[in-house]
Length: 198
Image (tube, rainbow, N blue to C red; front, side, top):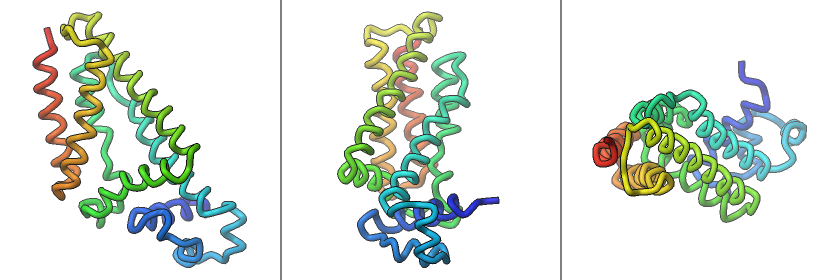
């Protein structure tokens, strides 16, 4: 059962996705949750706190993916990553194919980085942590003889990560679905893997 604090975060996050941080008012959050303003302040100090907790949840959920995926090989790692890293978990079932929602999740991160220096610092930290995880699996794959390339471990890791970012954004801008984006990313990664494997 969802507690009151989680309910406020869920409703607020959907409002932020429908609009953006600046357009969503505290009054609107209070009305949508069916609470009084005083009850809201029992759980949160401000709209900013709600926004930061919503986005931190998304970041934490994305990083948790790495705890669930296979590290036996680079091939298994990136396949598992795509299977577990599904943006649909952040959208209600009736809305998860909507272009506007898919675009807004990225917009929220850009907006948060622009408005809140602490959030930008968090994004930089998380991005580096993610890159480090990929570098480690690439290094292991090289040690096991799975891959061979003149590229450094960091360059290979960046090729995986950055190509996924680009394919994902391209799919969103061309109004494709999340599934289409994942399919495009997998095709790119499989082709790149063929180039670097032994």
